[in-house]
Image (tube, rainbow, N blue to C red; front, side, top):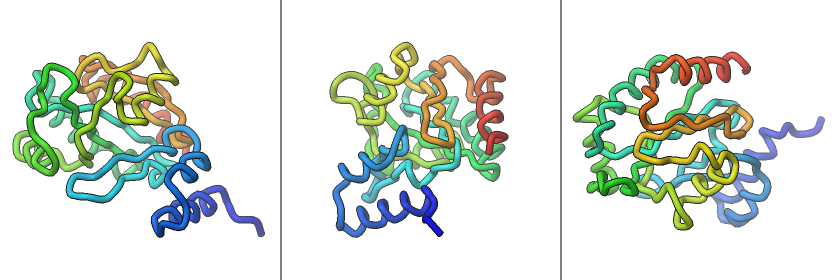
Length: 189
């Protein structure tokens, strides 16, 4: 019996983790958003390939932004859909108005204390322009009209790694359009 695509991807990811092949080789073997990963505060990596088969909501955040209250609404969304398969990744960024003065684990701790956030936070990243994190450069090439214009821009990634769409900062995490998009993707599995 031939191995499944999931088994092949897991084998490639395991070989990369063991240092047997480079991250670049892994990125070439994976497609869409699953080719990317984010650094974790305090060390380690969060490969999006680990969430293949699950929808992923990726949100650029800032603790001092006027939209920071969305962290609590994101928590409500996370509590509602995590057991059904949704992955939520907060990507802190200081790109808009210098509104993320914190670094590392202090960002997630501030979000937890102020907004009850328990979803995953990664290291602070650049989310726009030529210095943007590779995921954000890829997303901009996929959906040029849906790039982050402020903090709390939301990207929804499908189970297959395709970028399904972008939702601007003013879109509440519990808005019908975002909830319906997540629901469609969860039902597709």
